[in-house]
Image (cartoon, rainbow, N blue to C red; front, top):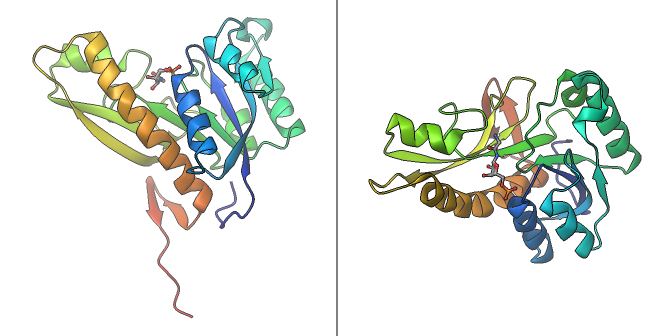
Length: 213
Ligand code: GAR
């Protein structure tokens, strides 16, 4: 993603595996003018993902790309890159996409692949973040939006928000409160990246100093 001010809506692809509530939050932010982007394509590795149905209802192009059809992560990445480049996609947002993307994909979209994760990374990476937070007994969990790198849930952090863990929380109640924050933070983080004026300094995503002219 070119780190420059964008004047035209940025073509996004959202990758999902299921429900797609973060996808809807992104769509609502676009519709409300809070996100200067257009959802060009929604891809799911599962053909039965509910988010695909929602996308079709919105007139958004969808693509089911079942991972079982590909012999390796590299082959899957290549197919995905080809589909996205053919549609002029510039920014890729993972929203509950439960597959690893490898170096082939990450290199094709440098600093242009984002993910939302339901914990305060680096605590509790992986697919069971809320359950692991409860099992560990942390008092605060939350949401992280980060750049995607080939290492699982380990890329530079763009935004985080904390969610307190209550004594009577269950997996469902904690996940629901975290999800509310995901829907608030993810579109805002995407817009920050689109707006430009940032750089990645080591592991840190920092705002560029305002140049004096
Ligand atoms: C969200 O909670 C998202 O953070 C999580 O899956 C859920 C998808 O919900 N992603 C991960 O755990 C990735 N490691 P959604 O389909 O309703 O957006």
